[in-house]
Image (cartoon, rainbow, N blue to C red; front, side):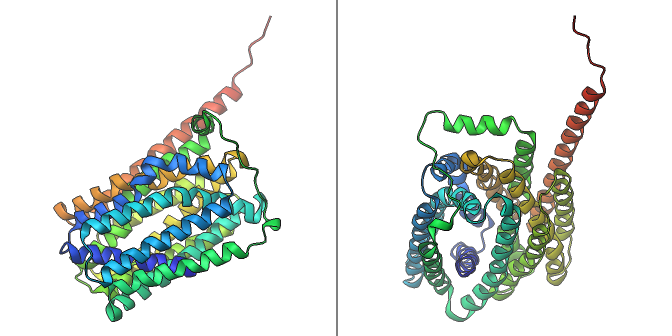
Length: 393
């Protein structure tokens, strides 16, 4: 909770810093976000392989320490007024490189902490904690930036990683459900891709999450641009937009925690609801009506993403989970280098409202297509079941 709050403070502060350095450039904001996620597009599978091969707890201690160091560097650069936009780009890319290993390892580590029986509930509760921080972080960031300046947010985030490192160090290893490490061997990445290909529930979920996350889930960019460019708010109200969105997201995470195992029908329903709500948000005439629409939008989105995560993890065996989650994170976040700059460009050329409308529309088309594919697949299985069996001589 402490570390996530610091992370969200940094995200808001970084966006604000980029807008200050570039005089409100939507393209620069999109490039920064894209660079943050570019390593996920390039190296996610290798990050998942590391998660399968080594102690997940020790790997997480290394990645969390590295993230703290990067936040400290950015904080010092901003504090000494020597920061340039290329440095922000470079640090965003470096953070993405660490995230490549951290994300699949952290996802797979959930099973070692709670066991398979409690996994779905643990994923949802983890999302709830994440979104509590998402509420607190931007709100605090807005106040800190207004009172102390942008550098303070980076320095507080750097210190917050100490909480994670202490927690990991104090864990009683004997009580973890440790999964045996997978020995190094050739073809392990191909094995993971073949594993997913043979399971329609996995690859359909990943395709759906790719389109929604790449084109629809760009609120880090759109909230900043809607706040600053369309509604002309200050840093405090900009942080409020992220916090309000997270209120809905928290509700979605808590609703997801009540379900033992999500279904594909739930995935499609929540993806459809999110797409429609995002389009409606783009039409809101004032800042406060826009904030109100962010609540149900966040609820639908987090119900969808939490359910997708559960479907993938519960549908995967322990020895494959790191690599499959690496592939999942590739679909989930790897499209950001495409989506974020594209959203920033569309906002700069046609206005931030158009970027919201386009993201919702693309997500809606993808949801409809996956729904039709799923219905056709199920119809084919029913027809094969009802078909009379051939007599064999």
